[in-house]
View 1: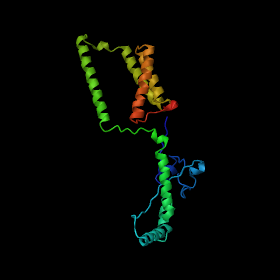
View 2: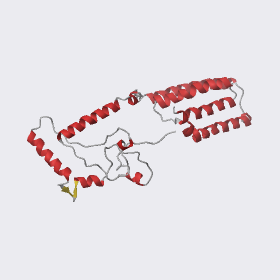
View 3: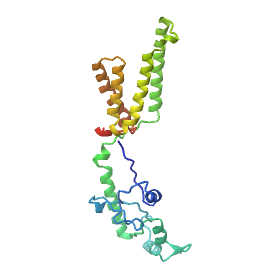
View 4: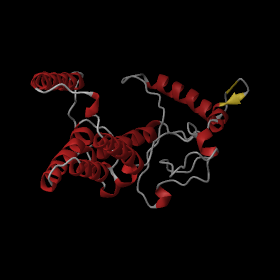
Length: 254
């Protein structure tokens, strides 16, 4: 029903990757990483997508040109490996960490920033992001739902107490064989959901369990179908779409 997927740098996942616990689909850089040459880029897989993490150094607007040139020259010496710290140059330290040592300066860096902004702009304004819900549930939504549920439960208990006051006294003989069977059926339904929900999805699994339990408990077939059709998709819509609770989609993809 679902696949765990994460976007991170390969050095972060190096231990898991080398132990075979995760699979890398590709790198978003323009070129393969030196430490992981076997991992292809997305561009080489016919996907026109390239974006990677980077660090930049900027000076305030209006900084005198001599200062800009001096800082640029020092940064260039560091990135070229002309400066060593604790016996290591900057490129060596970056390569050991599995990171890129590509250096962009002046107008090249400015053009890169512009291109990067355009790429992210297209992504963040795409239809996929536009379809995502922007509504914030807020800090009081769940406490409010719990409060409403408590009020409903208290109301039901009050009605139940009134009904029990009018009913004859219940003895231990009220525990019947059919009651035990019904309890076992409910537990079986829970086990069935746990076993098949990931493969079949919440809609199908919960629908089958709810329909069969209602039918077994004596509900008419058309009422079972009506309750199942209305209740199960409603629960899925509430939790999966509105509250963003990850419920298994299964074969229906919904």
